[in-house]
Length: 185
Image 1 (tube, rainbow, N blue to C red):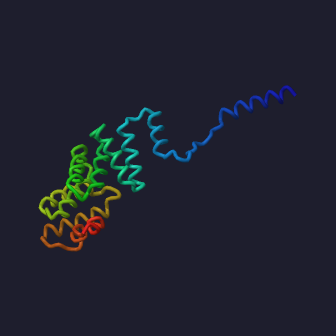
Image 2: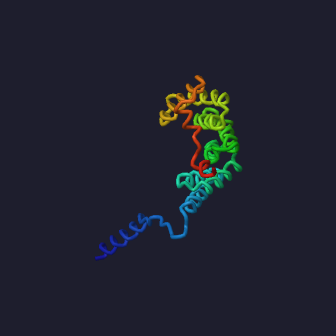
Image 3: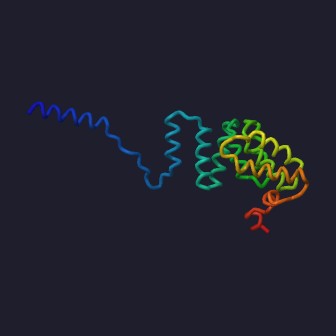
């Protein structure tokens, strides 16, 4: 009987050591708060934390909150090229967005995607000659990169139209007003 009690006590002690209660999200506590607490407990840089939260808001399509957190990230660490890039995309239809994209490539010159969007911006405002070198740079850097096939194809088509001086389907698609612009008219 003593052996049985002894085994029972040991089993209970060991069972308590391996017991794991899954994390619960309490109503009213946003996942970003939990993410924040995880980062802070792991001594992560605040700028990286804000970038991560901003990217999470981008995935949720909450653009206003994404911009707030991404702006905080670059204010704390201007070397976060991904935050600059996302801020550029959030403001793609204005000079502010273009400036953010420029910051992104200042920090990481071999990051191809901002060059595409900078060229896109120049096409939108009909500064075609400024778009040409940016499309060329994008094509050079993006060649062979996984996930860039469609954008690479589009860039080549637009570049060809720009070089030929004829606005075709690809360039027309870029210059077509966005839903936001159409609603303002």
